[in-house]
Length: 301
Image (cartoon, rainbow, N blue to C red; front, side, top):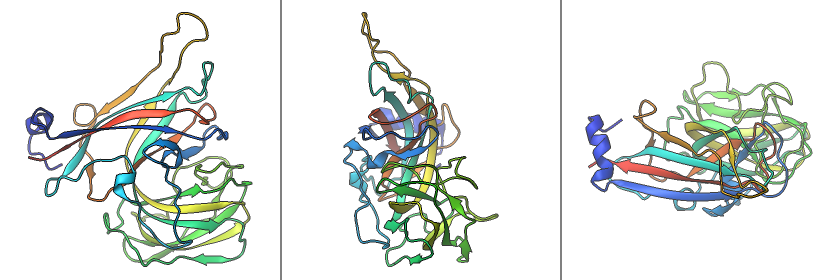
């Protein structure tokens, strides 16, 4: 962390070197599977939905201002100070989005419209555009986001370049049952055990770029393969809703996470960062359940 003292960190807000960004994301009404991760950047609301819409199989970057917006403060470095999150129920009786795990990501690069039906075909990616932050690949992960509903049950392998510029091939990656658009279509060794990120090979520290994808068993649908840098992980323990009878006051649990005071260290937001959340519905579907919250960032003097 660039701040030399905790006092300097605390004073950043008092001295006006802070920014609050508010967001509200609402997934579609199509049910997600309990335990399945969902990419909230694809959901409607504020900021606008991200559809990963660009040339198929060609690397592209997302525009920072279309994610959770944090203004540039060059040459000062920016850091995440606090997040406050609340998941609202889809209905007055809804409980399925409680105990939700959420992770904040910097979306670095994506390859859209990979055909998950093209069994036996190696789909080679165009890497004309590369990473412009975390260029050494350290800590960079791969997630697979469905761009259209899938049948599920497919398998595939990925070739990628690691931090040492060595080409690696993943073990067989499994897809869970049918997924709606926006769901993360990866599992660990079997159709169960859903993971947000593709498991990398042993001793691999991260990914610089993806070379190709080969579908082994058809999964149906289309997907974007996305390189991301994970930041903090938080939990929302309850959904916030109104009871069905009087009194009808709102209730529920808002999750607040503050760096330094509650967790060691602080995450720097690089120039050009596209920020967004992914979430895992542990109890049930996240369909139509709004995720609302605030992200506070600070910067050096």
